[in-house]
Each structure stands twice: as C-alpha cells, then as structure tokens.
Length: 80
Image 1 (spheres, rainbow, N blue to C red):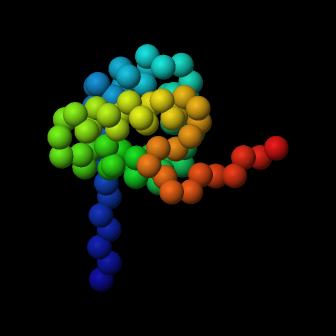
Image 2 (tube, rainbow, N blue to C red):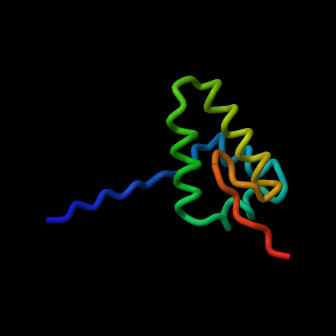
Image 3 (cartoon, helix red, strand yellow):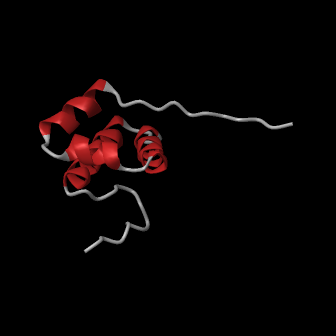
C-alpha cells in the first residue's frame, strides 16, 4: 500500500507584494525548480515568530532578484 502526501504551499499576500516590489524576483523565483520553491516556502512558513518569517521573506526576495536560491546548501553551477 502506498501513501502519497502532497503539499500545497502558496505565498501569503505580504510575500506576493514584497516579490512584486523588487524587479526580477518573481521571474527568477518562478523559474526555480518546484522542489526548491517548496523547500523555500516551507522554510518561511516554519518560522515560529512573525519577525523571523518577515526576515526570511525579505532574504528570499533579495536573493531571488540575484537569481540565488535562499536557504539552499548547494547552489547550481552557473553555465558560461
């Protein structure tokens, strides 16, 4: 018997506003692999305090503008 658990994570309104306030962030974040986006969103939503959650959102947006994945141990190698 197999059990499949699907996570449906979506961004809250504050996150969406912050992303659209920074050029390039939404485009780059949307182009990250689905698994990376899921891990980043879980990292944000697992914050215990609202201050921590907002700090993680800001970090994610800032790094996405530079096409860098937040909270990732390994970054993909850039192609030249």
